[in-house]
Amino acid sequence: MGGRSAEELDHVLAQLTPRVGALDGEPLLLEGGITNRNYRVRLGGRDCVLRLAGKDTSLLGIDREAERMANQKAAELGFAPGVLAADEQWLLTEYIDGAAGEPPAVRQVAKAIGEALRAFHASGVELPTRFWVPELLDAYAEVVRQRGGRLPDAYGRARELTARIAEVLPLTKAVPCHDDLLPGNVMRADGKVILVDWEYAGMGHPMFDLGNVAVNNEFTDLEAAQLLTGYLGREPSAADQARVSLMRIMSDAREGAWGVIQGVISELDFDFGAYAAKHFDRLTAAAGSPQFEEWFAAAA
Image 1: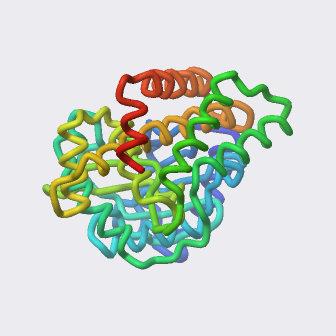
Image 2: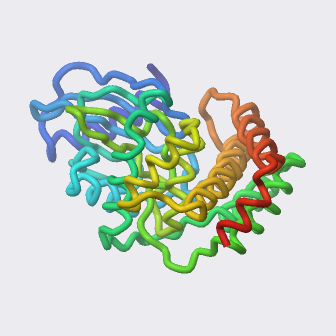
């Protein structure tokens, strides 16, 4: 580790140690992040995770105050690490010793994830930002054009699909949402589900979180029903299941668009073009499903 990254880390640690306690040992870079840089550090005698924000992350729709508020509320509810200190460019949270999520493991706790999301959506915390995919796609497209990038043809198709889904599932009553339930953001520790990385949290559509976790972890119909059972506290109806199926498409539209904008703003060494193509391809396949039109009829 060297250059600007090392200098930035040293600068942040110099701010933190008077507030949290002395640094013990060397920070350890945690692998897997594709937006920020994350380190395991020991400060004041306890293990912590320090996240340093990536370049221009505000252009991705990230609101750091919303992140802090959402993370802290989820910690109070018992399924997120506590926030120890926060700034616009960094976040320090408790280190939780648990297993990082992989899709098969996440699928095993579908019902518990639904229960956690229900509690967070009903928590009443008012986040200072809005998360709605049709609006994000428009904003991302504008940034890409301003930076001299090119929108792939699949981007236009994604915008058409999200607009159509929004007609039957409008954002009429926004609730606090996580909005980024990738496998690595769902952990298991001491027999509990722990949700991490709240940086995309905002006031949004409750069904988006369900579709987001389902598609990113390749839930079967049965596992999606278990997720919904945990969330609703009852057996899901055909309409409930159709809404999650449509929000899976909405989620892939967001992920594909995210890959496109990251391709023009990120400094991280990652193939964002391939990431975008993967999600656009999955979106296209879902839209070509024989059940596609049935989902719209049932959801409405």
